[in-house]
Length: 181
Picture 1 (cartoon, one colour):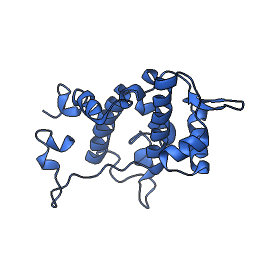
Picture 2: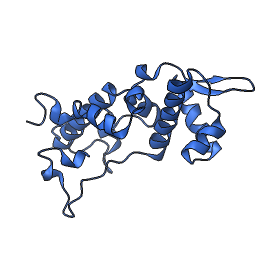
Picture 3: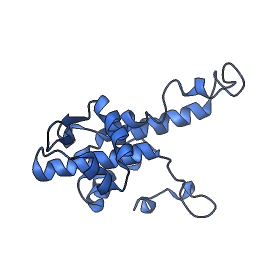
Picture 4: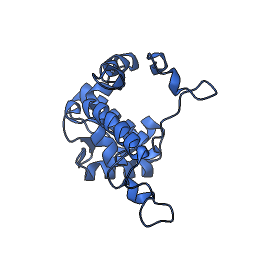
């Protein structure tokens, strides 16, 4: 899919593969649970989904799903429905929840202003604090990722992979004026 975008050959590793993005298991599984809830919302309206049903649907354990849902509930992204037919639903419509919100709740941003303070080595302050080209790199990449994830909603993900690829085609950095040229 994205391997066919123009002008990306410079990003290939020596083995011909693109570098892999690292997403935590919590972010991946939490996003998948949110997508399951969005698909249910699209099909049935507000019918809640139980932890057991989510676990079965995503191939996860119930305790793992419970932990993810607790995190998402605390972030205001899902709500619980009590009762015999209870479970969990999205707190808002899928089109009102962007992917940056979800990933932020599950693991935080790729880059934030405290990043440099966490990677000082054995020094009290990073030796490159005054002039750091790496900080610029992470800041730009983080900003681009934030833009794409902030413009992509849970409703966008409900469609097929082909639809999502087409949607993202207009939101990738190569399609953003003034970026990467």
